Length: 150
Image (cartoon, rainbow, N blue to C red; front, side, top):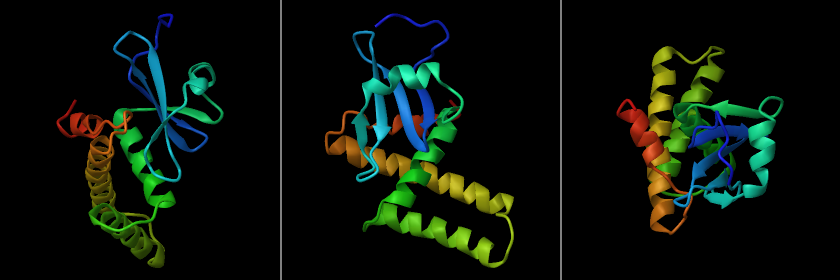
């Protein structure tokens, strides 16, 4: 693939409300990974490359790694149902949001920090499960790097 000035990989996006990441392959090419709405895993969607890279704006938004982790977990928590520790944490996040809504108020800074922290943890947990199951798009290191400050 031709080198594109200004494209730093990996790069992270929200594409029509769906998290997408573009990563470099070992041979210098790129892969586009989009979160699957049915499993929360990663589907290779290389056909989206040009649309995402050249059409940022409108329905394509660049995200920082931290924002990307939050978007992925927001997406997964909204679209997936299941059992186990990850889903228990998703339920906890929903309960925090519902209390604020019932009290007709915005989330407090402390609640926002709790939500961010839990989403970071669930991202790593989910990605580790995906990696163990052989998902080639799984990358728990995105959130780990963010947690360690870079």
